[in-house]
Every structure is written in C-alpha cells, then in structure tokens.
Image (cartoon, rainbow, N blue to C red; front, side, top):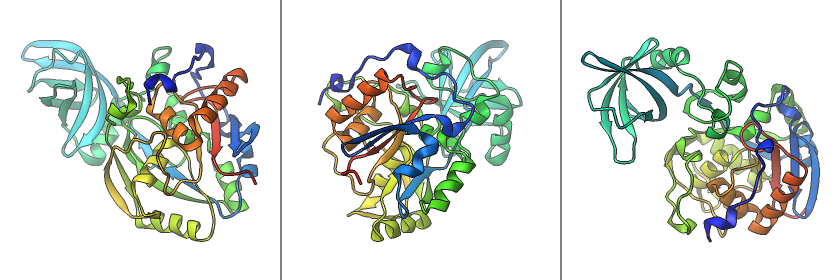
Length: 347
C-alpha cells in the first residue's frame, strides 16, 4: 500500500493542545462491528462485558528534554538535548545543534552533567551521565521538562501542568519519552468502576520512543523500517491474558503501544513472557493473534499508527470513522479524544 492511502486533511483547530480537566470526560467514538456510538470515556463500561480484559502500558514518561551548556575548553554554547532511549550505561539522544557537538564534549545541565561518547550518521548522539540509576532519575526530574509531541511543542512550551497531565495515573516504570496517550483518559474512579463491573486489567511495559513521532518517508509502506522500543510482558501478565482468552473474554489493549507489545509476545495465539526490543510494524493484512479490539486516540495522518488501526478495522472503515470524527469535531492526537475499535460483530 502507498503512504497516500493513510492521509487525511485536519484543521489545526482540532488538535488538542491541553487535556480536559477531568480525564474521563473526553469523548469516546465507539465502533463495535457495524454499530457506532458517540459517548464519553466515562461510559466505557457500557461497551465492555464482564470477563473482558483491558491491557495497559505502565511506562512512565521521563522529563527527557534538557537545556544546558556545551563546554569545550574555554568555549561554552547553549544546547538542547532530548533523551530518546536508555542504551546500557549510556543514553541515546538528539541534540540541537547536533553538528557542533564533538566526542568528548561536556554538557552541563542543572545539577547534572554528561559527556558525548559517540555520534551516529543518523544524528543520534550517545551520552554518559554523571549520575546513574535512581540518582540520575531524581536529578532528571529537576533538570528536564516533559517532551511534549512536536505538534503541541510548536504551539506552546511544556509547563508544570504537563508533569501530571502527560502521565498516566498508574505510570511506574521510567523510560518513555512519550505517553501511552489512550491511557491518559483513565482516572482512579473509572478504573474502580470497570473492576466492579467485572472487567479485568493487566499491565505490560513498553517504553515509547522517538519512533512514535518520526514521519514515514517512503511512498511504499513496505519499505518503512520501524524504530525499536524496549518492552516487557511479565509471566503474570501473560498468564492473565491467556486465562481471560480461555474463559471467553476479549483482550482489549489500551493504546497502540500495548497492542504492539502483546502481539510481539504472542506465539500461536498464546501469550508468552517476553523482554526485549520490538520493531513490529502492523499494516493492513496483518493477522491479529491476541487483540480483539483497541482503545486509542485519533492519530496523525500518514503515520504508522494510522496503518495499525487500518489493519484492525480495515482501511475503508477507518477512513469513514475519521471523516465522521472530523465532522463531529472530535479533538485529535495526544491530548485529544478517544476511540474504542471493536472489529467483531456487535453484541
């Protein structure tokens, strides 16, 4: 398929620059087979059954954007760093301006220092920091700011409210540079309501990386190479998903990151404990092994996420859904509204 197959026109006014004050107050576009509903996220339980299971990504977004000084001898210059991935004892990062950095340069931030250990042809730099482990993350919390998506950052800077609103209520495993945004709609009251209804839940971890924002640059999507991201499915999560499937419940990942991870960890229709980097690329024609549906936000045109939802629902159905969402003025992207996509028959 061609990249143009996943394009659509979107007015800038529909891009959500901030979330709603109440997480679960966002609108919910429900496509259940051929049946369509317009609701709120707080109504989610009406469209789920006792015995269904939601799979959440419990990654925690780090304040990965850093502003500091590059020091080389007596020369100092301002520089901006965005951490992209932990890489053994070092961190991969992007820099502005990157071309002026040299191996051995020291970069000083507020309470944190780094040394440039390497540079790649793709623009990635490799940094070793003066602190590691919990001390590093504690210093980063002071020195860094939230790495808002480019379509938000271009219109406003990150501020203190993003420290809470761009983080899920169950975030616990640090390492992501972008939030699993479908999960931003969940608050404690909604989670409790769903549990009381008999809807199960489990958690997996996928550290969302820079690939979620990188544009697809090839005309034939078969030529696109996905950015690898680190993930983990514990034995406990795998067992819970397998048991739910055995008992006839549906597995509904919340967010494309959770979906990609459980499909990576599946073998022969069964979940396996799994840890490693995944670069799974889901496009129309893919046969889903575990996921029976998906809760997700509305995605960027010509993105790999548009290709994923088109694989789940069919390209024509997704085009129709997005046309109606635009007509109904749903809010798009990370801080926007949500959709519940259930490809099976209604009922």
